[in-house]
Image 1 (cartoon, rainbow, N blue to C red):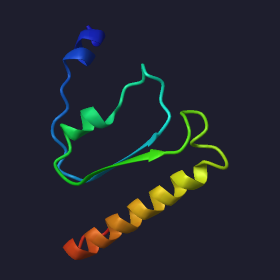
Image 2: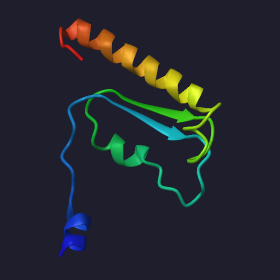
Image 3: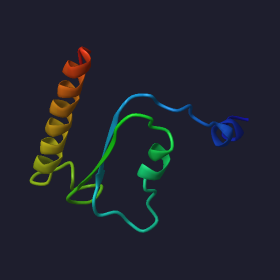
Image 4: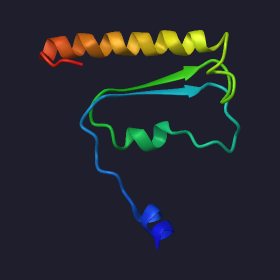
Length: 88
């Protein structure tokens, strides 16, 4: 029953903004998550392909690129929130 429920589940649209961080080097059989998110996100959707693969993009030295993208995304979210007078 649980397996059928998981397959039948369809998440509702998401009205907010989403930043997706994923490794640039992916195996051919790896799911590209941007396809699923594009159909759900109604706000701004930014995809950041970070140098490295699943194991290396979260480790030195490649994690520096991930950290820079996260920092830039947070700054962008804060600017958007100030324009809309929302606290992030």
